[in-house]
Length: 296
Image 1 (cartoon, rainbow, N blue to C red):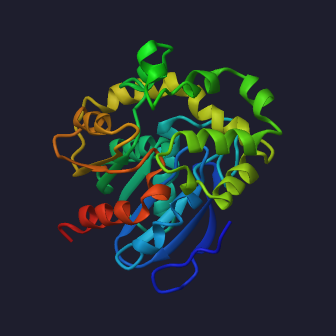
Image 2 (image 1 turned 135 degrees about the horizontal axis):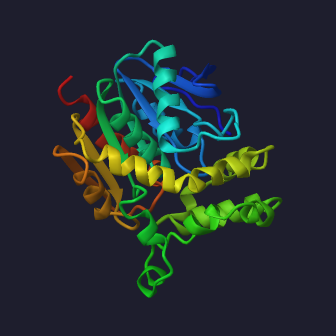
């Protein structure tokens, strides 16, 4: 893992807090309104390391490792979107931020949506990147169909990770080959998945309970479907940015948010695959700055 600094050359600050029954690791940097960055799978806060210095001039950035990931604790349960949203809201309370904006990609976007839906009075704006919500398309894109297999976004892993025990058995000891190959296959620019990123994913997923915690997110799918269906009955009250890549989920990201919000702005990053913050950090940071600073 590389040392990460803010826009002024100050190192990010690491911290740990026990909230909602789980000990979370997080980093903070910058000053200004609070902006929470939530990573996806199998990533950690480090997914945002190229974007953080581009945001800290304007925001107090808080980038946690969600429960089970990175250097946060790996409890037995609580990997559904609702519980993870409670973790994040409690962490922000502990850090003194009653109101905050939240952004996420991949599963981090699902968690960010859960925070916005579960705590709408606290979230000022939501950025939802490159994700299909459980119940609203995740299962459809993971099905074994000719159309999915021919596509550049066949989510075959959703069903595989859901199976108890077998993913742990097959991937344990092969984390580097598995994660690097899988993540590069989802990019437009495989070179964006650099050795430091792979090393971080391998370090954390090969730690005790690391693989189990990752897959428990997928094993909570049916709980998440029920949560999403309930939350979607009430449109989000805050502005929403749906941001996607040209070469992965794309326009479906916008449609996901239009199901749950009447105030959606959509931006698509050209020449980009699923890992936007690694492939196009400058473009993503510009989009986020424009969205989150508007109205301040």
